[in-house]
Image (cartoon, rainbow, N blue to C red):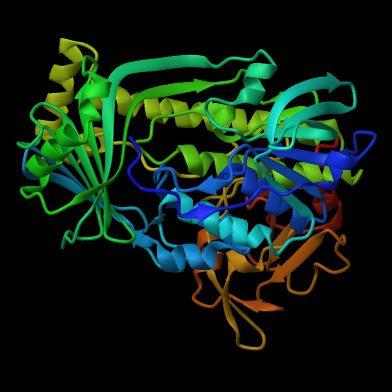
Length: 534
């Protein structure tokens, strides 16, 4: 049941390709204009790669869907030029509280320290996120966004794909040098290629109800195990903009999904939780946990990203966030291949790194599911013992799992990373995502490291003027030379010694670090980070 009506409507328009006598060839065709496809399209356009972006709908707003967008994802959106309205419209939060019955077990803060431009999380309905991204797309002439263009057929060839597209005015065909499927969990592209997921589908069912009401709850994530208003099950409460609140209620594996979605049944459950009926329903959905993925994300010239490549449970906000990070990982690599600056090995690292990220997300989602919905009496006894102990002991608090919140994956064994050749206590290891920190340029302007990173590689260093004549694809951030460590946090977070440096990839992960910076080692790390031989 969907209660909220469409809030963004876009019109179909005829494209020049529909009048072409011969199918035109495009470097990149993306299927699906959700957050993942929009991220990839904007990223590629900002790298001067033209993109055709296809979507079978012409509207945004059928339910809030994803609502929790993590710090790393917001930093990606900031680089793409669309984060500001999201942060302004969204609800910032970092604190969560977990209850057993009505008693608080513990609380957590996902970003207790300062010195970051973006908050730990922003809650914002997915239709707003997509709407702001479409506005950014309209500013970029290299993106051809075609609404009501449904992919109906794919003919794979050695150097690309021939794509048949259905429109209100009939079918047409185009050629894609690279076809990227960002078309969701039910991906038609995946079906056309005869591919399927591997993994598990869990039996327990959960109800999502977005309700509109005036309430004075704090801006925190509240999660209950076995609350009085929902006996024996779990519940979640989260704030969204526009006085809308997300409620998740565990229903159990035997629940009648169609009956549970009836408005009168949903309202009764929500009223028991809130203690009043002064609310209206915005959106209702029933789902089961799924922790599944494709074996491979790259199939010749067809690439999968986001939910078309992998699925995880909603608890932990890992779906949309991991999908956006898929797109960020893929964008710079695909651009480098199209420009002839890199070969197949760099693109293959997308599959290597994001498969590892999918496995990490699936592992965390599976563990959360097992804790939320124990599969046996023994598991139930163990879970309850942990909840009892968590009231008094720190070690048990760490075992409570109400959905580990999304964090970016560290690419621990990436072929693009140069391992440390010297002992380096602390700091950010190769493959890890880079933490933000405040900076100041020599004019006195305050900014953050996340804003100063280059579109290609960045060398963060304290080389005292020694890092000169850098390759043109490397932007220097020289502490004490062209930038100041505004609050001392950058050197601290990176454990950056005098004379040393950190090479940062275009997607904000560490490629290499050097206690003593020299040109030969830097060039070697750059070659490796571009997929060349070690």
